[in-house]
Image (cartoon, rainbow, N blue to C red; front, side):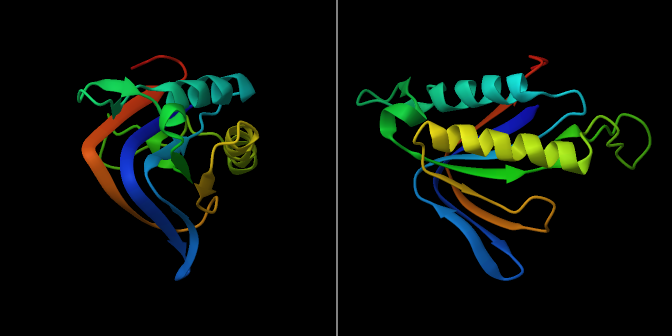
Length: 149
């Protein structure tokens, strides 16, 4: 499972000209599910993300997490995080999970976050979305449950 995590001041996602979700300050997570991913991958990434110390403390150092600040989480599905463009000009998505399994793990990730009492908004799986955000910093972190980076 892969994630692009961005520290944000606010975010929103629209589907078919309707607002599907909005957040205030916190993290925006673009989440990609790989074909061999399991709930264990989702649990690992969620724990990593909500505990990342990428928010500044009173001294301006990255010492606080989403949990410390009681921030919000926006989760957007993005299979293109598994795009492999090493050959040719059209990316291959053969390492991305197929729709039904990817949606199950995407929803599981969100369920687990809500179960931890984290305010969560989300896009709509498999839909064309317009994502808007104000990146704070900017701070952007790449994560992979296989610890590839």
